[in-house]
Image (cartoon, rainbow, N blue to C red):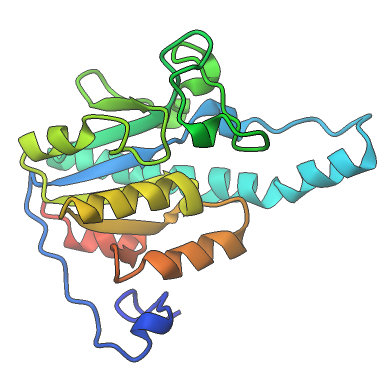
Length: 231
């Protein structure tokens, strides 16, 4: 694949000039890990289930392979580097504050796959152990797709002096996308790390990456980002 400066181009940026190198300043670039929670990494046992349900579970196998083989290890590598360099690591997770989930946004109450009920103290709602936040690191709890809309994260980042936000996590076409758009609207410079994100399918992931790229963020891979981070 071509370098990140010309990759993942949509119709809008076909033939446009290369992206410019990001100027990242120590202490002013934050890593945001979005919704990498236990509930999404549970793989159901298809034994004894009806064929349609077995097929549905099998359809999620590539997602789990990407999460365990690529996304979580890549995020872990970024977390380690950001911590070592003294740059903020911030986490967002979906979790309701009320016992009955009444505080959830409408999108999380509608019937279907996105009907999410995650009590904030439940094991299912916690960040996966491989990426567990350290004491003192910011963790925002949201009942919305965007990590900004339902939290004080915009204010927190502003108060910390952050100008660039590096977005990772799941799902590329849902909470990651909503967060990236919100950050861009709040005039943060946003970088999305392609190999640190996943959607339900690679087709959905790639399509959303192309939609977001250049308009709302710059998309690059972890190795590209690491070469720009100030030591």
